[in-house]
Length: 279
Image (cartoon, rainbow, N blue to C red):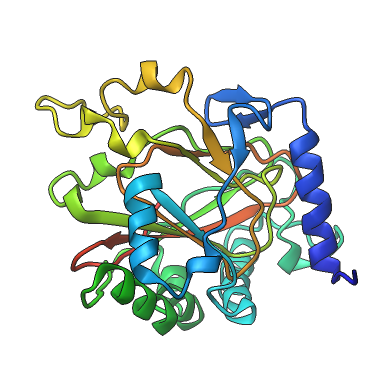
């Protein structure tokens, strides 16, 4: 079959990450195919919102491919990467691909850009975050009118970086009973670049409802024992893909082992009323 350059890269990345001896997910290392598996692709039921909601309830997440227009997402990427270059001077433009390749200079590390409005509220970024396609999708799944948090969450991760295991529930405990998360990569990434991974079944742990929760740990009571045999799932992603998951789902990222910085945007969303942005 004929493949575009991007598709060839993704297929090579898919083969290579599954062939790795181990991949770091948060603070653990897993062998692909055993405790680290491929996410289930739910794109085939994109037009059946009731089935999508059932899958979110049961599995804790849905992966949907090509929901957003790739060019729209890459416009948002350009805003973020251009700011990394002009404001923080951390992009190595001498490496192949120029600014848009987002290769970090020297030992520069990525960081959170949450609340940095010149980026998070730039019109080209909001065109992705507040896209009518997302609003219509969420309204169909959760059967209510979506709104969004004014705050936006943006994360950049460079070589050797990863996100620890955590649940967003503890950051929004006062209203988290009905929240979901929408994760959007602003580019094409494999797990070797650092992608989001979910811990299957963790959204059903009882530790979210017990009194006296440790809000600082960002992990539910009982997770340490549960995690010993738990299955984690991740995938390769392309610009335009989205991942929706339950606010209680414990998640992390794989370690970025490449010289390309990973640019991500998160959207926190309420299943019944509120739809917003997250990490």
